[in-house]
Length: 248
Image (tube, rainbow, N blue to C red; front, side, top):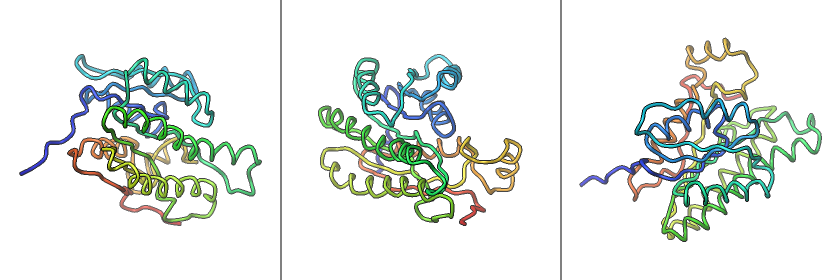
């Protein structure tokens, strides 16, 4: 006997950071599969561009707003919009994140802002989502982490700290909410051709061709795979890398 996959048709999804990179690619795939998605980013031009990329009739819906994951009041405003525009939340895909320099090369306000965005923002969104999911009988939390947690490359001290925090948080949270019919998953991407990479578009394309870098769409496909597993299945951690991932 096999279990049926979870359909995304009509699912109410909050996608953080859906205006660029992995988040933007995920937004396209979720809407294509019939989900109703609310997303946000910090820049109006990127948001407008992301929302302009939708296709055939009969697909899902996308709503967007400007907000900052590092700001509690703005996260509260996002979830007020979730309630108003979506009427609840079935899935949270937390994707909003910033890169960072080594700790001693960053001003205090800058590294604290990265932590507030990459880690505190994830926790804040998770808490608000859990409250709503528990009231309705269940849901799915998916966090985009990073293999930086594992490889600990020089120069990534601040970024790695945030992603390691997400990993530990998610794996522990899963045990706390499983009995409430809430699934928790983490995607750990390797090198991806997003704006976070410090190289040109041509260099990124060449790295993808050499199997040294993944595309954002490949990570989005992994996210959709995890979200569509049968109800009794929880993909706890999915690590996805290019075949020739650089590990130092």
